[in-house]
Length: 224
Image 1 (cartoon, rainbow, N blue to C red):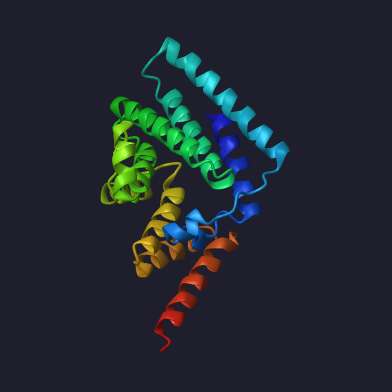
Image 2: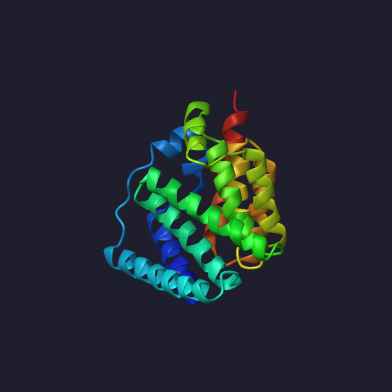
């Protein structure tokens, strides 16, 4: 878990530097599709993948000895999810991101079979369900042929479960839920989550920025 958490810190530092965490990029499919391929810091990228390689090798070694090792399964769930985020949001490699998302879901399902109370694992399944459930019907059908199904409402329910009962990933689940609510045109619930995150993490300026952006959007829509 240590190297996986190190990789998460490196990923989010890059997200912050590159502006990936600004929610307007995810407000609808057109904006997301039009996002630019970003230029990552090569040194940070190398450290990121080195940390994940270490996490993967240690986790797989533990699974060889104990196939129901909870921490190993959680580390592999996180690792695949982080790879999906890097590929999709920084490198704009959508197919690779989808493949890693499928891997994260598979590890999460194994983890939940071992420990049904590991609510953090529902973040991986929730992301997968929501993303695939948001795709156009023909694409969703093709993806289903590859063994991955999607349901937006099921995805939101899984994210809500992690947000309410998760241990490590509850704040991240709330961020993802806020983005989902913006996409579903439920600005009030998005704002409620962002306010709770701002109050819990007052040193983070991004939450205030996103709250202000939601207010600006409301003003623009109300003009004749």
